[in-house]
Amino acid sequence: MDPDVHRSLVWCKDAGAELAEVKLARGHLSAVGSAIGADPVPYRLEYALTTGDDYATSSLRVHAFGVGWRRVLELRRDGAGRWEIFADAEGYLDAPPPGGQATRYTEALDCDLGLSPLTNTMPVRRHGLLTGGGPVELLTAWVSVPDLSVRPSRQRYTHVRADGDGVVVRLDSDDFTADITFDRDGLVVDYPGIARRVGPAETTAASIELAGRAHLTSSARPGDEPDGATGDVLAAT
Image (cartoon, rainbow, N blue to C red):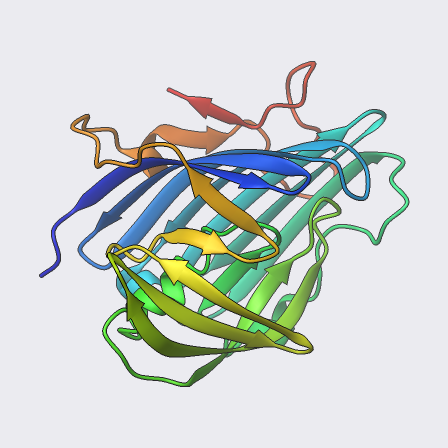
């Protein structure tokens, strides 16, 4: 069995950055993160992600906000593979509404948070692509950022080669292809066109239960309003 991993990671992007606290343990992933971006409008984003066995998504909770608007999204997937999607919006953003139709994702195991290098870890670890194999084809519930609309995305992952201390895995999706470099834990080092990791990324010694200690102050159900003047939805208890 792979050892437990707990790491703090920072990725730089062409128009923003992302910080994530990630825990990998016994086939599960949990993470909380924050991101900022400037395209198509300046925004801040916060998320909490948990998976069940074999890195299959259990829940993804996201809050995005900017000047004059904010949006909340919650995806849930139960053990039988049924998805639920809850979304809410305030203010004006010239973009599709948040959320989507949950029945379109019955065969999907994974969410895929747009512009985030984190969610690529789940299929890569599940299918053993750090050591070889592929191609693996799958359906994801892809979340567009910052509008938080949800769309189906067909993707193919293929192990390409070992690369020093890392591994290169190719992602093909629609008209998009990228050779992504992962470290030995399956966490993204370089995702061309999306993000590149910077700074130290050692496993931390702290014992922090990320998913259990983070929660949304909004349930993300239609009609609910996010709490707090800034609209922050992740809080450590």
